[in-house]
Length: 144
Image 1 (cartoon, rainbow, N blue to C red):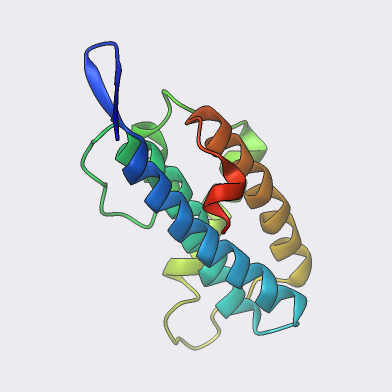
Image 2 (tube, rainbow, N blue to C red; image 1 turned 60 degrees about the horizontal axis):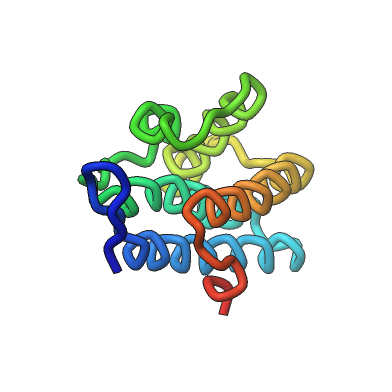
């Protein structure tokens, strides 16, 4: 469905699909976290969840989806929708390392701690709800 807002058409269906995929990654990451699974694997799932949540804004606006896993590089493209404080930006920067540093094997790679992942889960849960609200998408329907 397209909704007219000003001079551009909003694509709620595309945003819904992106948020649904984000929820899959988020709920998987949370489940693995609760099972005390490997923190690098949990981190990658949580990273993808946050990344896809943020890219839902681009889908909603029918904009080109930026091909980056770096959440800080993505941020300027969605800043008209959402603003993060300095602590949140620092967390986004840390979350970005879960993909760039933890998803591929390397000697002495940093592993996120469970405490750090809990902070990301709390942040992701709030962010998901906020994005659904901003885009007027029923959060419970996305989570089905």
